[in-house]
Image (cartoon, rainbow, N blue to C red; front, top):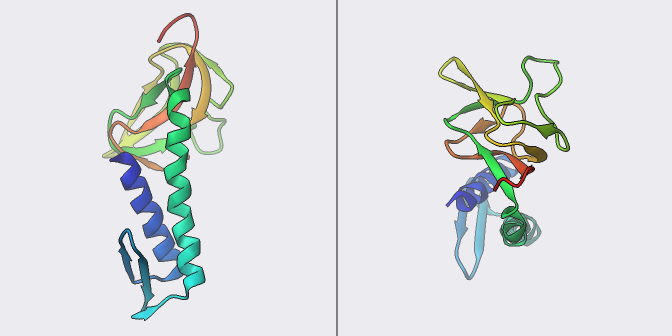
Length: 150
């Protein structure tokens, strides 16, 4: 489900970037229109490549993901990776973190909620960008656990 939503978001961004007003996708064809006129096949092919690449990534990443723990957003809100504008981020890829250590802030309804690590380990991936809106349960960080936890 998350993968489908990510693909839809990417398609929406492509539509906005290229001024596409209509998009029809089926197994047989992709139809894109800008102001009622079909787009050239080159534009359709370029846009079609992007979702195909997105589909391949999770298949390759799944076996590796079993060795990692995700820190997920406990609520919907804007993610801030640093304590304030211009400051260094709470954590970066390669940092060793401890359970309970602050990793980011999620702002929701004008409330700033500090998100802490629920395990110790090494930050393997930052899954969001500063200022990005995170959904409930969305991965914020992937942690390679240390100390035999898993």
